[in-house]
Length: 359
Image (tube, rainbow, N blue to C red; front, side, top):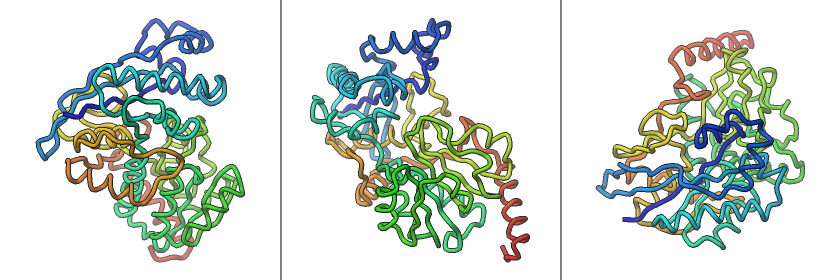
């Protein structure tokens, strides 16, 4: 049996209370100071995973005690690497053969390359299957709502990152126009040149043109707000922490917000840890790690700042082989009700009628 581990970390300081309940009484600055001194630890033992082929695996959540702000703004990169490499060493001691880098541990620095060089076991970021599920989920939502991509505008925020770039390249083949948004104009223009009918922008304001939006930045903040979105837009938020403001859910009932990468995992999986998902489901990045283990592939897979179309297709193949499926849509930690689709469909119809277009 090939075993795996997966790195988790608090998205904000108070999240550390899930592991250490006393932390809920401490100010964020104290929690971060303690976290900087803590070593990686075992969060839970994961059991019950079984492929439709009959293959089985088990694994562990390894806790990295750093928040996104600590990794990107408050600590030297070398110290961050040391913590993540410590997670790989602990995983090796537990018996894991490969490890997945969750959330910000997959994007900080060079996207896992340095970690993999110093890890005693294989490493993947999970970004390939994250791309696959973001693409499939977005197109599924379009189909349900009757949006024809061939007549629609797509926007990708965070298009210079590994996930955003590949999402833009693959999805642009289906859409009439694609707006790629990034912070650096030169890098964003380079991505636009790879995208069918691509337009580069450094302003989130330009996403108002989009019928469909994928947002996948490493900003660690809510950058997509109610005033940025077109009436009846579909928004797929792949980022963790999320890019889409909670105000969108409250102020824009016409907009459908879905989370990218929610996957049903084969077998009777028990994560033995509550991270806000329904039973038997997990993130796509986590699922990529698990499917590699089920396939006996203890190898470095998705690393660095680029995800190839070939890697995306390979994870789709592995998902089908082992029985991983895209789960029903979720938004802001809850299942999306049918009424949300009905409201967005009505908003699209109202907009197209106002524009004088036959829906």
